[in-house]
Length: 390
Image (cartoon, rainbow, N blue to C red):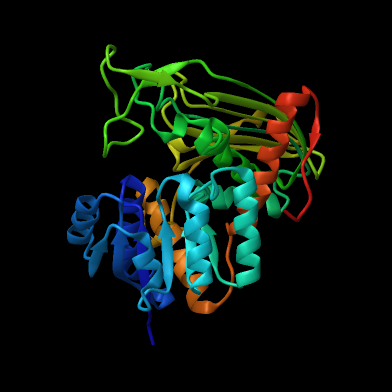
């Protein structure tokens, strides 16, 4: 018998649309899992935008008050895709109402709020999930499997980055992402993905030392209803940017590997370069989202060292979850497909009662690394990543 799960989505911008579209596709792409989504209600402070999403995706109703979504008895699970500042409030209400929660990263407005959300989830005993969607690329999952099988030996080096120049235009508008009262900048927005990827590929981070810089000191004020990709004229009213454009860090992993993490939102020449290079004693792996269907692989060839070199594996049906989208080798997946995988994993966890990763606990692990990096900005020295409790 198939299980249908009532869904509410709160925040109907680009990411709310992506979640809504993905839920609609789970029953098709992952038919064998026996789970479907029923789009019950969507909410946005802009009622017109909520109503447009209702009509576009087939929600049963739309509202401007997210509390209506939380209170709806037909809704079993909620996606939170609103700005970070309201995440914790919505999470607390949703978990308190017995709803399972999928929240976009970094979960809380600050690392401390993320840790608080993880504590609430622990007490509630409900399924939580986080929008670290890049980890679902089939060749990334394959890379994790290769490492777990010992294919590249003991890990020695890791380099992770998320270089995304979405804010490189000095006339890009001053959205909430550039306001320190709404949280960190690149540390939250981009480096959270890089930290999550590092944890999944190379294991927990033990110690860090980091630096930061803001390259563009002011930006034009935004217009209502836009996104952080919008631009304005050079003569429009401006205000100060109060958080960081760039973050870099040296890291030491608990397993002994040494590494670096780097993220920047104003870089020129990189569009969506979430990437890693991981080296072991017998091989190495490298991947970038800008070529998300390719995994570069290096294996030592001790009897014939002259034949050693990098090869490229193309995503195909033998890699995790690729076959849900197409049966062909080299027939690539895209960003929205990763969101469909994310939605499928979330709904499957609810249907089976078995928690899945990345959960709020995984987000809390990322938050502790963020706390340590931020502390190192003040201390100018190495910081130990915090323990398991908020």
